[in-house]
Amino acid sequence: MIRVHRWRLGALLALAVAGLMPLAGRAADDKPALDRTISDTLKDIHNRGVDLYNASDVAGAYRMFQGALLMARPLLAERPEAQKAIDSGLQKAEQNPRLDRRAWALHETIEDVRARLGPAATAKKPEMRQSQPPQRPELKPEEKKTEPAKPDVKKAEEKTTDEKKPDESGEVTGKIKFLGKPAPEGTITLVDAAGKKKSGEIKDGVYTVKGLANGEYRITVTDKNKAVPAKYGAAESSGLIIYVKKGKQSFDFDLAP
Image (cartoon, rainbow, N blue to C red; front, side, top):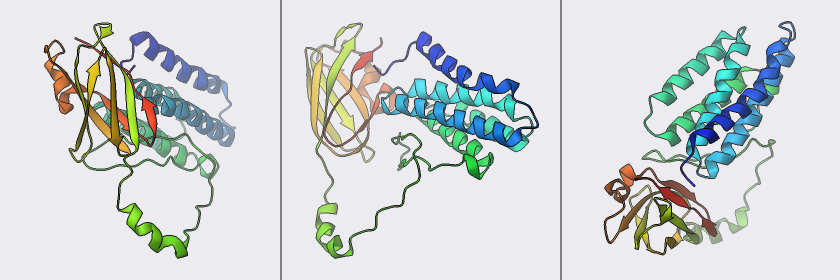
């Protein structure tokens, strides 16, 4: 479900605390090892948050990133520039009204802090895409650096025609609940960054939408009896966001009153 309960957020923060608390007793004169351990721990917690983010649990990812940074800050007393970066990142995130943008800002803050801890702490950054208006790109866990594949010059001309056509093979399906019961009969609409819409019918709380290109979609839900709150009928206010990939995938939604 997209909605995150308070008890679950508490559990996510507990993971961040458990990851960084053992560092509090590290000797101050072992600074290189401490920096490396802080960086590795931030990376591990970051990747846990990435899994939540890509599963559409944006709030959970945001709290995971936030907890990791708050616990790391006091351990960086000898690195005031890193503490300043954490303070700035947390403030920037809090000022953004969108949870996905908050999570994105703290993701960048973690990357910045790890980069400040030295060359040994750096790693390949996740491949995340942005577009206008701001979207929620896909986050990927930290990976080992690999050499990019060289393009096949001979086949470049053959691929030109195909690349002009977007891959619209994405298909999403799932269940929609309202007040704990299957949503009433109606329509679900997915709106991409360019405003293009794809819709599907909701019957017995189940929906399917086909012919989707890769990317982020904002979602609206309407029903024939107008029992579902009006905020879900507008992409700007529904708060429902998913990231679609090629092939079939499932997303469930639990609508609140």
